[in-house]
Length: 110
Image (cartoon, rainbow, N blue to C red; front, side, top):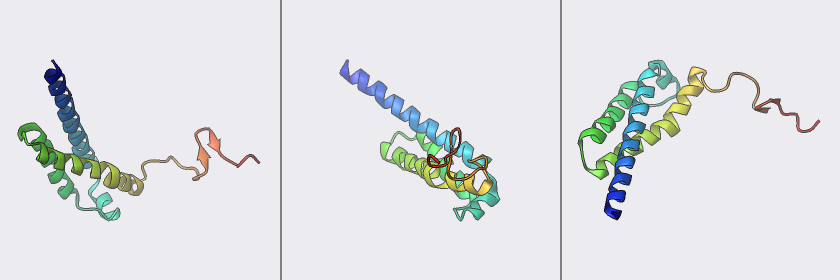
């Protein structure tokens, strides 16, 4: 019974790693090529190949070590590349200053 629960937990982890890799691949494919150059990151084709391999590995290769390498690539894309692409592409904030809060500008109690 405990082994069945552990196997279902591992299945959930494998599914989460696959979903993360697929979402990263789609986001990498949607971003413009010139945004990668402007953000001083690797080429779009590089990230498409790396994340495509991560998706393929999660689907067909049962080795956890190789799947973890794909997970690391997906996390690097989400943490480093995607924010840089959003900053260059004009995504993210919709204007305003850095002191704006969720309900308007913060003036420090003045």
